[in-house]
Image (cartoon, rainbow, N blue to C red; front, side, top):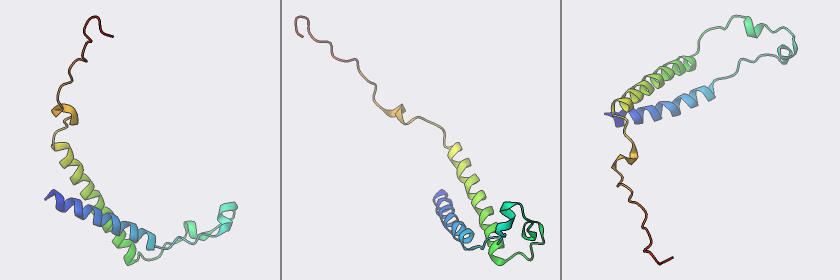
Length: 99
C-alpha cells in the first residue's frame, strides 16, 4: 500500500512541476519595478483557467501524499542503523618486551 502512495507521490510531483511551468506569468509591466503604476498588480484577475484548477488539485494531492508518507515513516519506530552492528572490541595490547 505504501509503495502505491510513493509512486503516486512521485507522479504528482512530476505533474505539478509541469503544470506550474506551463502557466503564463502575470505580464506585469517593467514600469512597476521602478515605481510606476501598473493595473495588472491590483486589477481584476479574470477567470480561473483549467490549468490553474489542475495545479490546485495536484497541490492538494501532493500535500495529502506528503502527510501520509510522514505519518507512515513516524509510525515505523525510530531505531538507529547501528543498533544491529556488532560491538567493538578493545584494541590488542602488544606483548611486553615487543614494540
